[in-house]
Image (cartoon, rainbow over the protein chains, first blue to last red):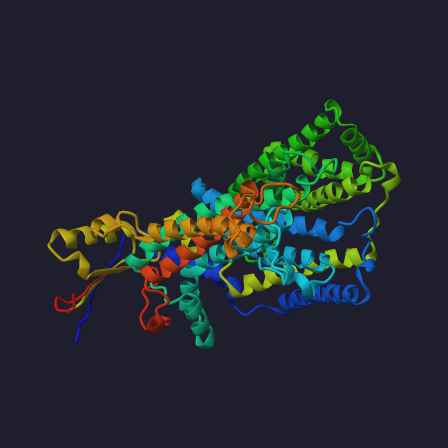
Length: 446
Length: 156
């Protein structure tokens, strides 16, 4: 029989530290209270967009791939554009949570949970497109490494096979990272909930108590996972870029593609984080935690990556101008002045010129402008992938082989579909999981 | 007789932990419950550093070796399975060496990370004794307090 003697010492005058921490718990978990009608209307709206897209998807499968705009010579159309776009969005989640953790950039702890959720959801979005793009999704197991009946294995030299490995590893590791980061916060959610929800959060938190032994291993776990995720995030988009760069096509066959794609991915992802966090901060009144200073720092990351992307555009053009490759030069003439010039110049405006406004401190701290800019960045980065994928295929070596690409309404529907999925899933995430890293905010505020 | 000391804030908590150990309480008997990780607690309680790194190393190395050996096996498997011993082995495509190490490096790299991350997670669950099936929903929780529990003499 053990007898418990409790000694409580009040720390000091003013609000005790534990009360401040209780307040943080309450403020962050506010979204997990019973939501209003508007929430369910929004979720239903998002998922009906997704379901409509799924119906189109089914129609494409039933009637054939010709329902989409892809045809000779542009055989990689909007689905591949969307795939690269969503994989890119995923990247800044890992950047914010892993790379900035290793760099000890404190501002990350206000964005990392949302960014990690964004990563997981957008990798799921990305996965839908290559599956469709195989033309026969039920044959997708062909990409798995196993020997065929004639004892041949898949070709491990192919960038597309690397992609299968890279993206599936990325999905697994980002799910692990997302889940592990949430364990202490799920225990907090468990403490504040009752009934069946208490059991569900208890199950998800794996019985976390916050003992010294648990924390000791947990801290190491986060560090090692961050150390794994950092090279992973750089490798995944490099591999995606090699899908293009390993071919001989003008406009694709360049060595700068890997760093250029990685910077672009982080740029677009930071834009998407802003698009998500700005309304979230407003709705759940998190202004106290996600301050203008935090946005200011995120803006500086956007400025950096925007300039890298702009530099890569310039280098590409310069190489085509100063190089001896006629095809490369002709292609860039087409890109800048041909049929797709509107997409190209809109891309330059959104990705290179509009973010220059962030040099002005007032604009870096103006939430409405940041929201507008984040939308522009999303549009710009989608267009970047469009310009890269479509123009190179449309105007390759032989003028006799040239053609134009026109997306059909099916392409538009399939693109819109995953925005519905993405925002719907994000809303559900805010409702059911702790939407900000409570533990890390406490650690920061102490 | 187990004793509990609860504190609202970290410095007093850490101070008490050090005091207890200095007073001759066996650190093995002390368990703490904290809302955030407390730096310096490990030293105060004379804990050994986490063994987790070896799981990470093991997983990473396994992944790397698997990546290379698996891809190389797939091109040389005919040579392994038949009695053919003369060079060149394997199925030659495009006149290139059957095993293309630069290309396989990417597969090995991804598997290093995949196996490493999974192994680290499993190692964590093993070392931290999680999931704790019988305390999924604990009866007593300390919330945002920093708590030191000193277990009874006999149980230690």
